Image (cartoon, rainbow over all chains, first blue to last red; front, side, top):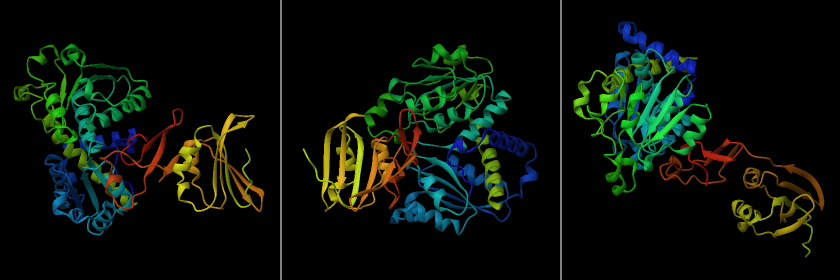
Length: 306
Length: 138
């Protein structure tokens, strides 16, 4: 059974196909409004989330399907100690496809290994969040017209930021890419991502703690939140949380066609004043996420038929 | 020093000197009731020095665990005092229940009866990563 656990599960051709489908959904929504009639998506969210769960549910409704929802671990059998494997087997009896978020890394992998229906990883701890990456990719495609020849600045928490790791893995497939890694020393990109993805693909990159110094060269600036829930130590979180705050002043030296992205939710790392800048694309990302989730649900249900 | 040869059992040979204790622990040999000999720093023409483990019982041994500690080691199966099989180990691609994932955020920390599985992610540096959370084996 085909599932999506990691963005690397998708080939470049498949990502291109999903982008194409999403663009077609945007152009012709009526064509897709009954595609999932009679199908049910189970959203199993064992960790708080607003946008991702609603995005999946909106995606399924716009495809004409229905949704079964578990919105927190405490309201499910997980609170009684049920295993992920048993939950996946049980939900397979009710639904046609699962979207799962879980605080433990690898939980959707275990679910996919035990479910008889496709499982989509909707975020597993600090590990993977492939549908956020699909949203990011569609945003880059729509804003930049393609994926090649881009200098991508990744700023903030590059250590625990799963969206950053997945985006690097996805963009590393394209040509002419350069990464600029901007973070405090304590939140640097893990060495295995650098070694296994960036260096392995021969992609040029630079590392800095100074956002302003690299701003003029960026085509994309991907901001991230320093996530309280990834820290075991509150003191470390408080010390690092305000490392980078993007405001209109800092954008003065940026390219006129810079694309500012953020996986959201933001806390204070992008000033609200930036929202009015035409280069701010983070709310477009939210919308693009829904279209890509629609394209993905269609693809996985289609493959499940075979 | 002499250690008696065994009649029916296993001899793990060509262990790099110093690795036998790690293997002893990883294979849980302390739980066996039979006679187990751990011989360190044996003179070897090929290796200079080597370790050997002799187990006086025909028990299944986890070859992946041996390959993880020492891919050059060999496993000799002895029956009625004769060598009946010699297994060359090599580097295993996956390790199942050989190591525990130490990442407290990994699903293996709470899911019942879930195998701890690591996959070789870098052949050159022999780095294994958990298949669930991708944490490096320690």
